[in-house]
Image (tube, rainbow, N blue to C red; front, side):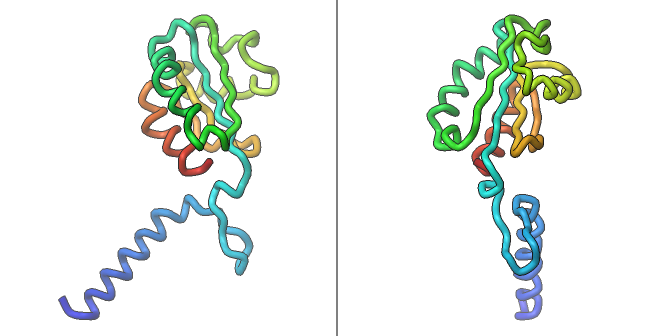
Length: 146
């Protein structure tokens, strides 16, 4: 491979990497550099579950202790909403008044539990439900952003 082709390939690889990771950066005004999500404020993680939900019970038994023992847990505000059963998961009595507006997010996601909502400064960063959502979406985001 000649030098021009090698330089072009290296440039292309660098450009691709920059494009791939640029959504993870929060660009400030020109000339002031950038900051990662960690500098933008603490994450709030809201877990919604039910006592008669097998995936919820499994997550609370297996994944939650690992989460609570992690360094990331120390860097987030964690809130739990646990209903007595699936059918009542969105009822007022289980939701603190300041989180009730998030029920619409759970409903939009299908209304099922377990469900996680990740917020920063009151804005929703991610929301996903189902047993696989923790491992594939929510946990990687928390690790990266907390």
